[in-house]
Length: 180
Image (cartoon, rainbow, N blue to C red):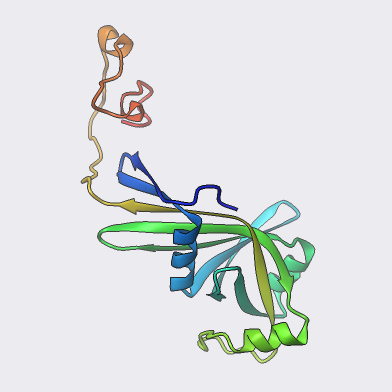
């Protein structure tokens, strides 16, 4: 699971970024109900949108007898991603873990009480639970107006060999142009 127990502030070219703590990541997972399930079968990645319920210890979702369930039965190691964005910023949480079909009657009864949206009617379905092995999240705040540089960037020999500007992160002073 996530090692840090508090949010860690950082920086990116788009603005401040915060590596979220385990508690903050769970809080965001618990606040949403729509995410993306990522599976890999025979080294081919697949991503499925799903409605889910998070109880702060794992993710539960409902699915039909189809491709998604078939893929989960072939490879139980999955990733689950939830994100959101607004004018102020964005966040993303990724949970990695193992997925198991619920087959115990008490687990199924508990899952039937979870508040799943009814917008996709499925006649026959099963519940799947993801038990986390790793959890990590990031929050990005938009404080910097980002514009693309138009034109070419040319450095003289003295500029390319000089030390990085002390006021800027080193990623902005790289001479390969990728960060410029």
